[in-house]
Length: 332
Image (cartoon, rainbow, N blue to C red; front, side, top):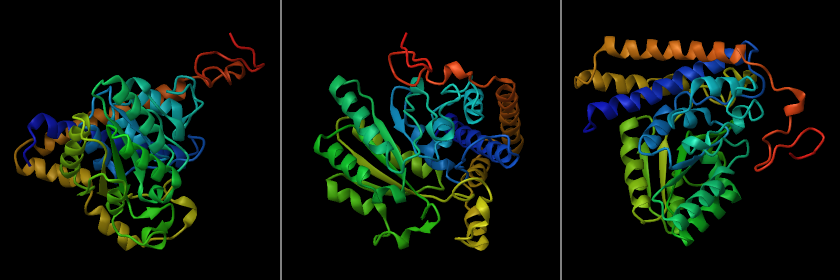
């Protein structure tokens, strides 16, 4: 591992922030303290952290229905995130977006998305704007393996390559599309095989290893930033919880043994072992980081619970860009 100490700690912090936010959200949902669906990112932290560790606030990302981790990795604030999940007016989207539409444009996070594969065309639009403005920024589209079976992904990849745009397609291949194993829905094993069909390079990396993701994504992002055009990075990863929620209605589409085996590759704990082994930090130092961030989570939960719900007259406010529309439809 050749990363300097600051970068190692930065990647670790991004992953721990994601883990604690997601675990807390899961507990709140189980306790009926969060409305709506919840798709947890636990297990996949190395992908978001490794990719976003290469990005600036001016670079854009688009996300999926499993988008909390991407926003946290981009620097999302716990208070506003937790409030949004609770539907409160202090949330990122004033309580109107919820889990699957959460965003922070100031951080270049263009939004989670409840439609499978719908983030890629949005990222292409951002990349086109970057190229037109010649601002040196890069757009990254996060998506799952199942999304590569969707037409929107193929149109986005084709257009990005035809126009030679500064974009990276970041595939989080966790081997399941909702409850269906990948080999039941496609004839290929590696998503990266699809990259050549559009004329862009592709690379596979270990999505449970944050350093491997950081290095693979870093090369693709730098290439795009320097005018080299699109690339596809496939991170082989795994989600520890079910498709949505924690227990997920008791459906059994994978064995407990499989999940237990994958948990042995926990991206945070294995990275901590490596950092301790090479002398980056000791166990006490790591425990202090966890405790600090746990306190931040508790503060965010309290902030969200103390925040008000949106009032009825705010239902359409901020929904459309460029105007404040009231419930009666009158713009002001």
